[in-house]
Length: 424
Image: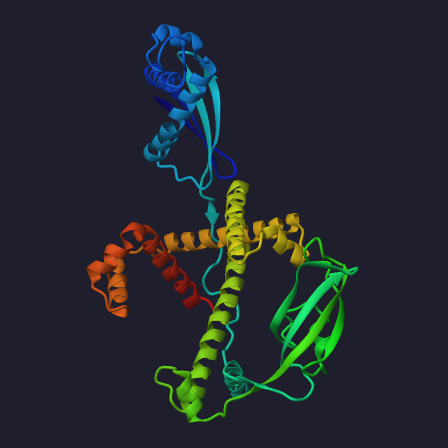
């Protein structure tokens, strides 16, 4: 088997493979047996007819196709193993010559982008100083009180923030539509969980009152309802208002937060939570700017195939998340009022950014010689064992099938921390 490797532009390698006659003949014979197994010859049981007779009934083109398809995975695997080529997208494959005795195949393989790093240390990006105000802490505690509020019956008219228990039945041009009605439904007024304008029209109503609510469905809605005017006949059964718990040590204890049993401790706990969240957000924002600056200083050509594959993977993830929520991606885009082409354009933009950032990290790691040793990996696993109160051997066993990913993620984290430490 002969291979000729030619380096192409845009991170591509062409590998021309000439398959030796013996290997090609063996592949055809194997393919013939597979195709022939499904052939029936009159007068013979399946698989019992003489080979010469079977060959007259076998489509030779099917045999050739089967032989080529059977060989391709082995040819590709041999290229990757022996020529040490690391692919980053599915290869393009063409059969350039074929006969009973000859087979030549061309593989065009997308490889890692060539990265010419510009300045990546000593950059003045501007790190934000994170502060948490007393007002923010108090607001967080108020939110806790609201989350733990109880609903009590209210005699008077409903207000925004109250919850009404109602029956409603929707119709368009006097005709009820699917999913437009419910009984004893609890709706918090001002929660924006219903069509715009719906909840506001229920403000001021008391238990036992009726109202026809007139709304128009948004243009970005399910196709059969989008933009259509509708009437919802609403009957209010109850009006409930929130009763906030008293802000004292007893309330704090009832929250069940570990090591937090007093109001002062709760304030400190919320302050630390808010600070951690702000620090995480500031770090993400800083890294986004840092990567963007390094990319502008560098030369990184990302093959289109790589972007396409990453965008397709991101789309698949989105479809799975939507499916778990009971939506299709198409319905989600309708609600957002977003076109398919605009959605994919944004995915490709995000994919290109993510790929660029990945290869920046990879190249910084190479330049700074930051590859992990086995001892480094062992140390990190020991930390995990201590954190989760496990035996080191059990951690190793749990990670055995994903050790390469574990090691790679550790390296990426170490390189990212290096960039944070060496830029302002």
